[in-house]
Amino acid sequence: MSSREIINSKIFKPENLKNKIAIWQFEGKKIVFTNGVFDLLHLGHIDYLSKAKDLGNILIVGVNTDDSAKRLEKGSNRPITDEVSRSTIIAALNFVDAVVLFNEDTPYELIKVCQPNVLVKGADYKPEEIVGYDIVKANDGKIETIEFLPGYSTTAIENKIRESE
Image (spheres, rainbow, N blue to C red):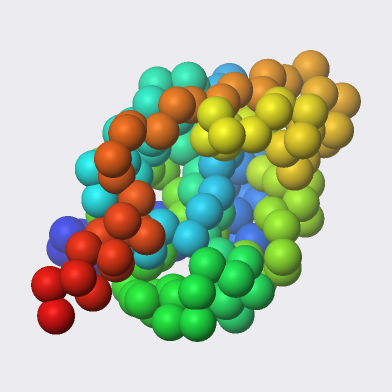
């Protein structure tokens, strides 16, 4: 299998992910789930995602579709990169096991599909405010928050580019 085929094999539709999750669960793997837009991948994303992976065996990353990302109101020109690019770049990371796009405003339905043992978001959230908290807690899972790497954000990169024009 080529490197590109390996990357593409890590990108799932929610309905196709169910079978892979069943295999991982049968194997006793600890499944970690997180989500985001992941526009303009930067060191902060790498730090966050690698720390999320360290919380289990399998890292599943939900990536907002373009439409879903636009509804987050991060700015009229966001996302900067399209959903195919963003999901492919995330899937190219060796510590990411699965990537799945979601078009809803939140990943709640996707979390129901994934049934993660660990749900991860940034430390700017209180655990009980994280979407999917109820699903994970009902299955005796854990909610973890990760501090962001100071000084790294897509908005900061976007502003720096604008200032240099």
